[in-house]
Length: 503
Image (cartoon, rainbow, N blue to C red):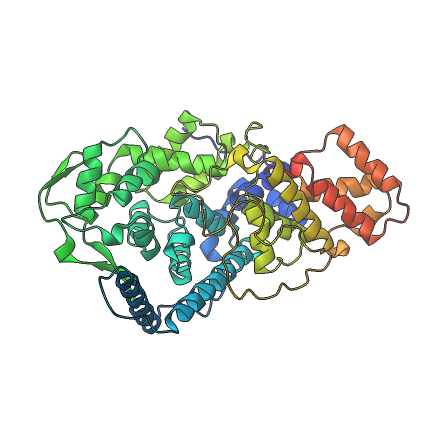
């Protein structure tokens, strides 16, 4: 049985915790408003996000382009023929401009992916529905799909919108949409699966990573599931899911204890019928929003809410954010911010715009996370993996860039890991220093104690250690008059503390 936090237990700190976990943080005045609302109304502000209008326009290129896909298919076929000709198997030459056109396509896609990251980061940092965007980030890591293999910005945008549409909706509807999503069909090779050669990649990850977890299915379930899913394919010209009956294996199959002439829909129906899927996905939500330390009793209670609600996510999220366990001292201020959460939250707290798409990509990549390019099908490990010597230095450098507006020293490749995609990247727009007046109240500029207190309240969920606070006070006291640059430097120091890395 889940117990809800009482009105008497609700305060500024619990409201700040909710804003940090259900969103990307909030300024003190917003947290004070949430604290005054009480727990039920404050949670509803996040969970019932559809009541707030979000009129963010889609990128102008985010639509199917059959003409372009026809040309690309013809060019790629010609290139394959030329490669075959080099080995004596064909004679068709490749037009002189074909390689140039394919290279231009790669550059176009590189720029669009950068623009797409900026588009989504802006929604996280400035949008009216923080929980919806936080859920999209969760589903992006759960159904991890990378543009490095998909190689089509439209597909990545469409998947992102699919997650947004179903973010807090029904499990079967989301699972069906994610399974038929063009990016997923390419990423896990489902589009190539056919009756004579079923591809097991998608069926395996569907069971292991997306719905049940290891130990709750057999190898036969994988092979039989793959057979049932044959025919779920992709029309590459129209850029949409297509069921191709000639590719489907119509024979009898047995999957998770059910036998019959099973189809892909039967596979998904049978998966969501398993009690384990309720526990699995509820545990994933608890791990993402609350704590990586498992709490079996809480997860079991959330799983019951999930099943009783018809496997809809909104009741689970409401129960999670209202539960006293969510506000346990061991849960609060214990989660290491992901790089994307760090950047979106920093922009919110600094009350400033995002850096340009190249700089933003380099910032998060240097910290270990690149939107639309998770490291593998498991997504990002998260937790302690976010903090290493190099990624911590990248956070300090990013804090300096956001506060001072000075260029980011991340190098041409964006820091550790893979380089940014090649392309005709637009030049970065100068960032400019943060406006101190938007961050620090006028009265806080009068003495060190008030300034440090105001910065603690705005930027930190856990109080500084006394030694840290004293060091900052000495730094401020040594600068009589406190110029804007002095205050910016103090903000940067606060953003470089261990406490700022925690949500």
